[in-house]
Image (cartoon, rainbow, N blue to C red; front, side, top):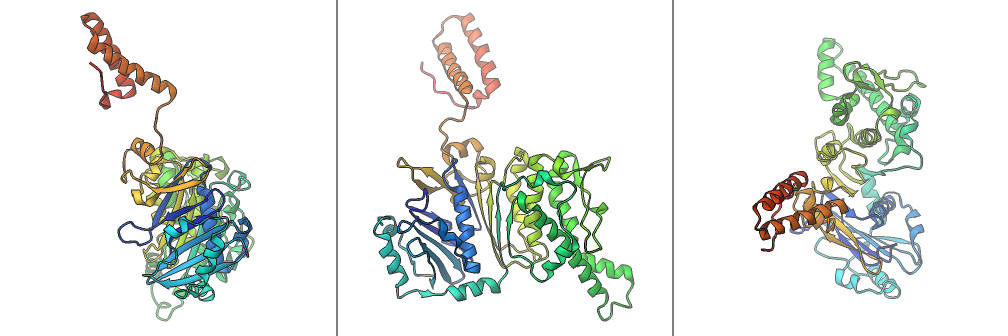
Length: 468
């Protein structure tokens, strides 16, 4: 089940917008999408809205509609699964949401008709006509049952929380075995991932440690294993059942190694008693000196807890479908690490079978991260003259020069500061003077100055039009 399209009419700054999350040639929903736009264009708003819609689909929650203004708002989200399309339709008039399915060759909403609607008067009738369409059926209960019958992970990773929970960690995040073993009866299928929920992440680690211990005991007591050599049993079990802390170290060390740090999982103190907690730390290479979590740089701390929490939700599970919404995944990260960031998210959303069924939707301001997406996987949000928002697909090819991406997809006409612009103009004027000059000494002086500026600002990489 993946999102294909979003139709928004009168929803906050989205007065008349259709967002297309499908492949331009196949029409299939994309596995990854990158939202780009200046501050205030609604990237976070879209992630929050989608999270609320999935909440309704999974649990029938109604909190989504508290954002609506009566008789002014229309929201539709189209999903696709195999040979069916599923629609969520919401409006602000009667505070109701509708769920429909239709055959794959039938398009429930015509984009041209939708765009021509007058959001103040036409859309209530449009909405009513949709709900009465003979080609569709109300499948709310069966849809929710479908979602619950499959492992459907729903993860929303915010770049901030109400409190700076990461900086307040005095030793390790707070939890204990007693809290963790409750997850045996109710392992969560959704998670809010932020500094406020770091204890939930630590609880998942403890759960996975205790589950592995239970699985190992059950394995050793199986018929035929009681008589086997202990070392052989241990090796066989370890090969099929990875250690969550060891696997986490591989992910964390991708960034920790560059900072001269490592996750010392081998020295971890696993909890035994019900009131005990997991004690595992980041250490300095060479000295093994513990670096407190609240003393790590904000970029490292945000990275390890964010990707760690997502990883823990997937660890040792078969995940048939999932949606991952991530706001500013590159937050406070140094440039070299951003270049590999998408690969990290692909790694941590791969399930125990080695399969990945997650649709990932990111919001970013970083051209290095956005450049890892194909142009049709980028959705660029722009301000219109009337203060509303429009959306278009990207144009710069995947892996393009960040400067090209900034100019083509981010819409920055000038990529230099005022001082840089002044030097650019000076550089061009000096070259013009060089062509016009007839004095050899003056030419030598001009050439020397031109070369100095060109070397300093790399202007010699560009073809400069010069008047003769």
